[in-house]
Structures are given as C-alpha cells and as structure tokens.
Image 1 (tube, helix red, strand yellow):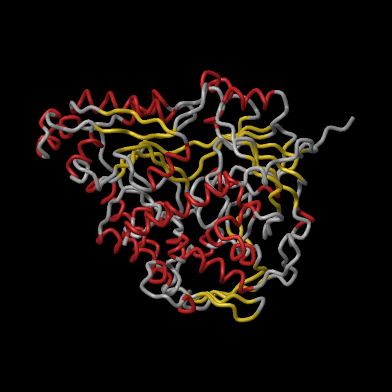
Image 2 (cartoon, rainbow, N blue to C red; image 1 turned 135 degrees about the vertical axis):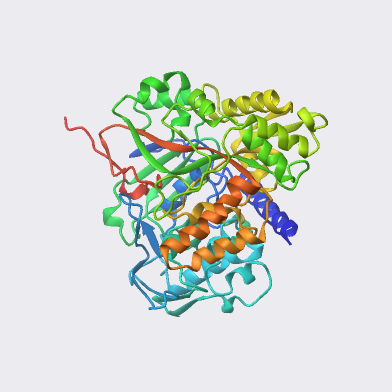
Length: 543
C-alpha cells in the first residue's frame, strides 16, 4: 500500500509542476508594477502553494497569507486563536468540537464561505488521490485514517460534518489536547472547491484564484517572486497592515544581503541566506533578531536500504559522531548539540538522552554487523540541499565533517550528493537516498509534533522505518490525559528512536534568526518561528 501511496504522491506533484511550468506566462508578473509595501527574502522556490501538499517552511510562509482555517496562530504567543471560526465549544469528554463560522466570510472572488467548504477541504486532504504528506495530522478524526488508507470509501463516515452553513461538527476518536493546534496547520486550510473541481491539478493557476486568507495571489513567476495583494473581502481586512507583499526565492546570500543593505529588501527570514564570512559580525547587529524555537537538526537514514536496515549499523554511525566538536566547528548562531529529537523547552516534556560519542563501541557494533574496520561496507551517499554561492553552507560543512568522522573511526566511505531544494524534498520523500540531512520545525508546542513523524503511517516519515511498538506508544500517549503518564509514554517512544533503533541521528537544536530594521513592525519572535504576513508593516519615514 505504501508503495502505491508514494507513487500517487509523486505523480500528483509531477503533474502540478508540469502544469505550473506550462502556465508560467499566465502567472508572470507585469513588467511595470508599483513597488511592494514589504519585500521578503524567503530562501527557496516554493514546491507548491497547495495547502494539502506543501511540506516545507518556505511554502508555509506564503500559504498562511493566501488561505486560512478555522483557527490561526497568535503572532506573539503562537497559540491558537479564532480564524474563520469565531468561537467553538468542546464536549466534556473532549471528543466533540463544534465550530461556529463567522457569518461574513467570503472568498476573495465574492462567493460565500460556508461550513461545507471546510468539510470539503479536510476530506480532500484525506483523500488518498490527493497524496498529502500531512494527512496524518487529521487521523485524530473518527475514521479519518481508514479513509486515507482506502479501507473505507464513504467520506461521510469521517468525523467532520456541516450541521448548517455556519456550524462545523468534528468528532475525534479520542480526546486530543493539541487538536486546536492541529486546526492551525495548512492541511486544514479552506480551499476553493469550485476552482479545484473546474481546473483539477491546474487549480493554482486559475485567475482570479479564490483566497480565504488575508491576501490574494497576484503572480508567481518561477525563480523571480511571488506577489501577494491585500484581499479586501477578508473578514479581518481592516487589520491587514500591508497592501502588497513580494516574496523572493533568493538562495544566494551575497545577492540577498546586497538587496537588504540597499533597502530593496525589508526582511530576511533565515540566517542561511546571509554571507557566511560576515555572520559573526551580523549576529551582533541590532537588526539581527535572535530567538529560541522548536527545531531539531538530524541525520536521516533510509532504513529500507542495506546495510542501513541493520540497527547495529545505525547505532555505530551514531556513536561515531562527535556532536560537541561538530557544532563547535560548524555552528555559527548558538546551536546546541543534543542526542534527542524533541527540543528542550517543549511544553510538558523532557527528552531522554540518546547515544553519546563512543568510538570504541561504534567499531564493536559495526564489526558485529559484519564489517570489521569497515571491510566490505559498501560506498554510500549523503544527500543535502546545497547552498547558493557565498551561502552559509551548513549542510555541506556538516556532511564533510561526518564524512571524515565515519571514515576515520569506522573505515567507511561516503560520497556527498548536493542537490537543489526541490530535489532534496522529492528524493527524501520517495526514499531515494542512503543517508541525508534532515530537520523538523515544530508545528505546535507539543512533543507529538516531533515524535509522530516517525510513526509508520506518517507521510512525513522519510526514513522508511516502521515499528508497531513505537506506533502504539505514540497512540497511547496521544489519548492519555494525565500529563505525567503521557510524558512517560512519549519518553519510552523517543528512547526507541535515539537509543535502540536510530532511524535518525540527532545533532543539534536550532537557534533562530531574522533580519529586519526597526521600521518593520508586526514580527514577534515566537517558538514556532511563525510570522503571519497580515500583521507585518513598514513604517514610512516622515519628511
């Protein structure tokens, strides 16, 4: 089943890319157009702007401006606040959510947004034909997992229904403490059925494109920019601060920083797109805004390929990594080496320790696996997305260090495979790699957002590793209302990840950094690094 699911996902995205390339002129930006109120450098070219299909941070940053769900995130606290739903009630047993939509909701094209639009959007994300990697986030609904797996065909059996035009009834399998956080994710955003049914895979190139969020898509020109225009019909349009926002997919740090210094760009979201040789100085500038956030960097291992299907090999690789030395040498922004997956500071949770640096034990385990001193171990590849010229080549620098550590300690040989962002996304999603760089930014402040990634049925599990016991522990923890008992279950599960099985090797916790001057308001350093576009504004100088 998983093979066919991945095949559907591949062809679905391939069709979208072909449609986008074929229609690029339709989405081309006008030659002469007024300057944007805000211009942002967003690192990578978006893979898609379909809320059901996106998986990357660059895509999510744009999509939160175009579409909205029942609930959205507070820009200061990153906690759920009303979105398309103005209020909701939760049943005493925590399994029934009743959402009440605002009565003034309309698409940017003028048609009303009703409860059945919400139901359609969620069912579409769960539909196996959509091949959404994030569909698993909706498995908390009754029958959602079976519907996504194709075990049941009747969508009306899934636990979401429209009681009337302004009321959405959601029934969960079990109480889920973080369900409102789930409702802030793009996979739950309301998308236009009328457009999708008319254009199919080409729906994102429809003009005008109906939007449920604070902005409309004016143009999307590949390797140039995405331009967003204020949606005057958005329910909270009076509080949308900027009329036009340009988002540039520039990966070259020298280009990015020159544009920023000249005032042609207002915001740089990531420190990866500033010049590496200037980073020590730039970190001390007042326009460098530092923050802690929920993000972990790790090594992903394709556990379906030999010899990496042997846990002893994966453990040996982990034990041969000197994290402290690596982060001290490579880290430039305050990253902290860790041997666990869930970041420190996550609500109601403390991670167990994983495997520390132990070269002798690493050599012993590799020998037990049949490769004494690396003899007979096949040459393998490490995949990572390459930085543009002059960039902070973190992924490449880490890959080089790992290459040397594993050869020096274990006697094994690794080749480096630098690829573009989209190729990295596709290759890891389809398990077309041996080892590679991996990371995750928390979708919400709960250990589940990291640990559920590695369940067998999670579309974002890019390791191929499956373990029924692990799945059971996560499922049991998710329905546990006692926080201490829940933490203990999650700790047992995480121990399997970082001590026993090692489908991933944790390296460090991220340190966040944005660049913008004091004339930019509406950006708040929260733990999810989530910055809704409609709050951002540039204060013009008074002359």
